[in-house]
Length: 437
Image (cartoon, rainbow, N blue to C red):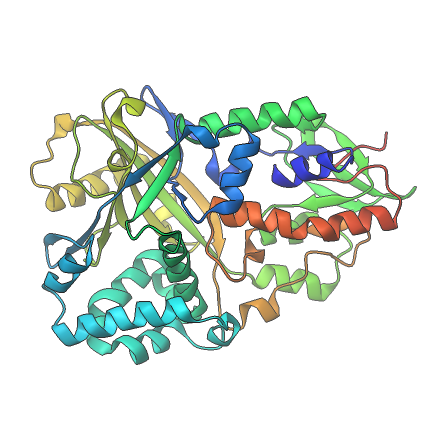
């Protein structure tokens, strides 16, 4: 959407093809019972300058609400608060030496600038070196497994650096508090407004139009088959799908390009949304180190968002990150509901059956690319060997973590290359892309 917005603003004719029946992808919204909110959990940080500037363009920056949030930690069967320095010092699972080493690791990572050097070091080795074996086993390993599963063994230290760097960037804005933000109405409101802006500017939007094949047209340009919706010829095409999809539908790529795309490993998510009668806790996020809990964390959105946005109810997310072939993706909603609620009741014994008003599951097998060793060196360039064909997706976020701000920033960063190609071919249109009927 941002690429289409920027390209149209530069005078290009643009068509946006979307496989789903609405725009937004991982940031899309849905209904859970009578509440419309984000399908997956999202927050805005004070340091998310690219996203905040975009919201300003959409007339929504003034609708952003900021809240000081708290963080919980569930370990050894007990829920602890870890929202400030004093609570950190009191944190029972770690000895004083382990706390000092943990704090030192976070502080050191926040000062690292040569992130490419960290790409050559396994994340587990780096964390053991700086935090020690005890802290690694008690804190880092459970968190790595929660976010990456056993894929953490192939992940570089750049992953933890990027995670720490984003949170520290938020605090460098001048506030030492953990301030998170949201737009009233959530991403449903943002996407509705963004869609209106695109259409008003002249961007053609085709929904329910999954791209099945892209190949060079005999008369020049690129021919795109997008199923029942139709077929079109474009001067240039930008594919923003996961790498494996691009490798499958883009014909004419070199063997090396196909191999590079197919070798990108992804982590997926099974995310349950729960609508409750009442709050669970005061924490926006509760990190979990217990291996018996089947989800990654508890995200209590109502600790950030005014509950009037949810009709006075409480919205909670229970995410589970896993590799795309993990059996969790094939478990039924009823099975996941039983397992997730059983674990949640063990964590919160006062949660009654009648407190759960709704339970809905989202499954996405390709969410973010696994930052393996030497990841940026193996990544294929955004400009392919097929004239006019570009592949730009979240896998190209090489020194950050997947979030909406990074996605918008990626679009901004790749704009000069796209415009240079458009000008060099004197093309009247650019695609994600535009018809040359």
